Image (cartoon, rainbow, N blue to C red; front, side, top):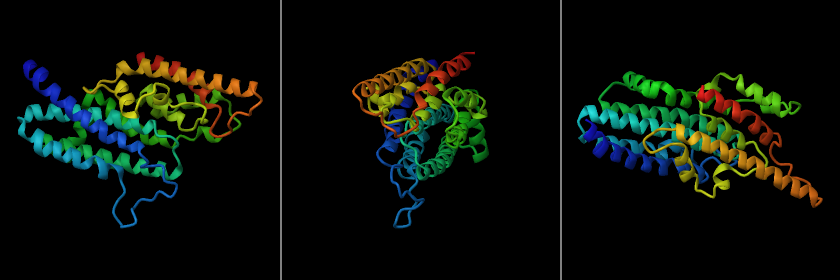
Amino acid sequence: DRFVDSLILAPLCKALNRRIASSIARIHLGSYLQAAASAYDPDGESSSFVEKHLSASYEQMSSKLIARIPGEYGSKVAATVAKFSIYAFVSNVALIRPITEPARMHITQDLTDFEFALQQFVTNCSGSGSSEATSMLNQMDNGKPYSELRAARQMLYWTALNDESKGAGPIAKAMLREGWVKDVRPSTACHYLFSYGPSLLSSPHHMKRMRVEDYVLTLVDLNGSVEDGEASAWMTTMACCDSYRQRQSAMQQHGSSASSDGDSRIPSILLTLGPELLRRRRA
């Protein structure tokens, strides 16, 4: 089994996951940026990102590749691909910027479609029923990936920022009290806040001068593990906040007013929130 895992299954999983990573990264090519986004295309076909770019990939993987592997090994491959897919999808969603109300609705629908596509994928690979597939998703890695997928829906509708009278500290504390926070990685919560930030606050992948796809792969390894990327993601977040403050200070020194777009509290919220999220993650 160790021979099969290291020389056959592991390379196969990495190849499949790299393919999935490229497909998911297409989410940043304008899928949610149309101001007049709607649930359907003009020709009446569903505009779901998952249906357009992911469902067919999972179907091909299960029918043309994994179906040829003995059931026991096929289930292992399916579990690894599903785990990677969940983390990569959520990480990409958290990096979408900006998130408009139509985009929020589209993402919510895509999270539902994505969960269904994974259930079908696991079902096809393992030969189990849909209820068993859901159970399998819920049991992967002690349920952590599936819990984050479900928590991401709640994160999208977090509303504490709507109260403009609150300072950064109280908002950070309010976020830490949210039930969904314990189920998402620190990088997921922090990156999501960037979508509300001012334009002077660079996104993490821009700060690193990386494509989104490559940056996400620093958060999620091709074998599905995620812990190694959290400390690095936090260092990048701090660098983004520091760069924002330097830009803001430079503009003020030159008599220019800082850009009023976005929520100027975000950098301070991030610097308050991040250390506590990491501490909880490590506890």
